[in-house]
Length: 120
Image 1 (tube, rainbow, N blue to C red):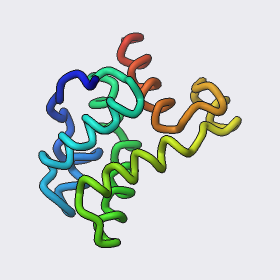
Image 2: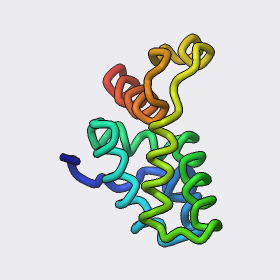
Image 3: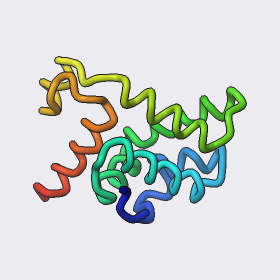
Image 4: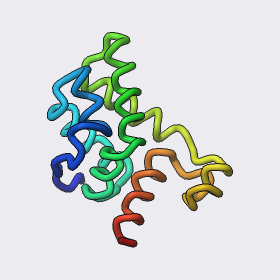
């Protein structure tokens, strides 16, 4: 079950800032936080940090592509989560980041941000 929905710390960039050009960013943020927490099992802080990062911007671009294709926001978010969970971490990305090869992409990067937070 998802934890809480933390507010963004990056209103200008990342997921929130990118979604501001395509949908209500607060609504999109809530949907993405819950969907990613549910899919990955990662805590709210990791998901927030992921969405606030450059990877969150790319995630928002993918959601926006779904909106351009005529999907409603929730469907676009869910489709993006499913796509990012279907991709896996490549050997190259594993070498560059330390994220285990073969792990679902979304889980890998959300967990990566959880580890970075724990290390700081």
